[in-house]
Length: 166
Image 1 (cartoon, rainbow, N blue to C red):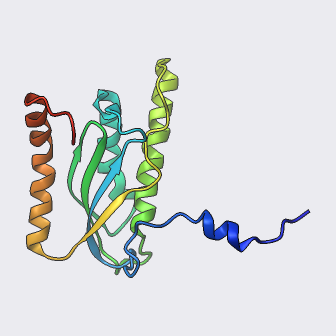
Image 2 (cartoon, rainbow, N blue to C red):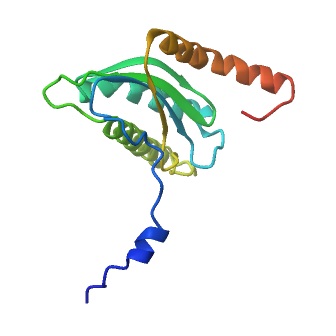
Image 3 (cartoon, rainbow, N blue to C red):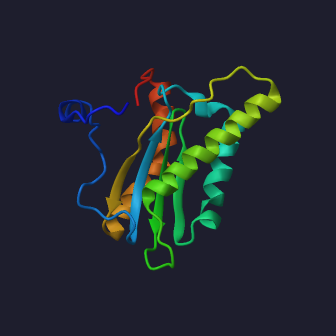
């Protein structure tokens, strides 16, 4: 028996997207991305997981023609990166598909590692969403690159000063 559509239910339980509403994510563009660990715990400090995260990042352009990788950093509970999409390829891909593939591949590889190693680790790694910011010019691009490069140093300074917030 099919349920009747309930517009009140749909209205109340609609998740608000954090994507830029008027932006075409399949067009050429450069993006600053942050993806966070599910519970904002320091799971990315595990060396084997860091290797999976890095190798998957390095392999993305082979999967997505028109994707160019820039800066990338793995922090204890999140990753930052800059990616450039060139929209004039035969089959342009959206930023969401790239992020989805990255999250999926890393999760599958991590689960495989856990199983093969006999570890007792959580398999859910990522928060549902990600944060993106379109980069509009060379000055902004360089500022985001510097932010990514300095992020690990900033974290070390915070820990050395006893501040554990990020």
